[in-house]
Length: 345
Image 1 (tube, rainbow, N blue to C red):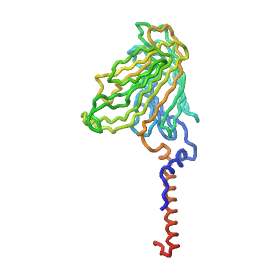
Image 2 (cartoon, rainbow, N blue to C red):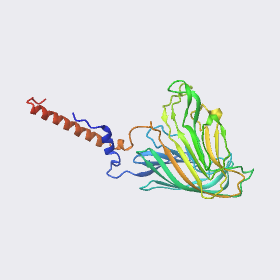
Image 3 (cartoon, one colour):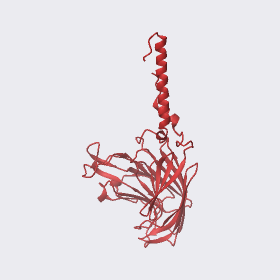
Image 4 (cartoon, rainbow, N blue to C red):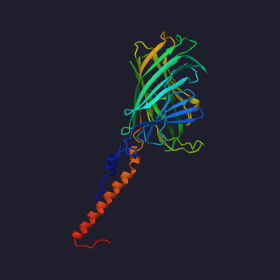
């Protein structure tokens, strides 16, 4: 019987369209729920990222892989002062094009529970590669404060990455260990680099000043055994990476890395117990900040084996397999006739 590797069929049908005769591409779905709005970023029917506006947030949650539970760390792309309740964001526009999805946002710098201390704008363009299971983005970010920072205002937080790190928890693989949505954060500045593992340094503010800061929150295979903790069992999942790079358009930016781990929640799988944020120190005399942004999120190697286009191409696959089988049967029958055997029917 003639055999054709399934991988050849998959690659032949990937990108074959959306089943309506049109070429697949980028689109946006909008969902409203109790004051929260989700903007779902779609490519070729794959939901690869969500922007969540929850009463004034700009929260980006990437999903570059195909694991249905492969949602991990979140990026709150907005500035705030210490202890503030995040809000005051306007999603000015979200549009799709042949090249990707473009986001324009603006708002006020969150201060306290309801106050503000300045304004900000952000523009981002995102694209997705199904073959690489990777999201990339570039953009610009500007902040104008109402006045200089001080001991009263505290340092300026430029954004927040929220994640989950579980320490010394039961694992589905047996025993106990560390797991969660992240493995570590790899940090690079103008003249330094290090890896931050939250339980090793629950409060980490090394104080190295930089104009450039890359923070790569490395993804993790989350295999916590929640049933052993006394909760409902959840499936293991491949959690993706999340990287944000800030590059100041001005020299002499007084920016540092900051990382906080809530030790009391180290075994709580439902909590964002990790907070990562670059800070502008309160000693800064600047009131305006202009930065370039790069973004990247990539699935772990074990996250799925089939690209998103395979599901849409299922009818084509079935037809191809049927043709191959019929061809093989026909050839087999011809061989039997040539050998003088009777047909098998």
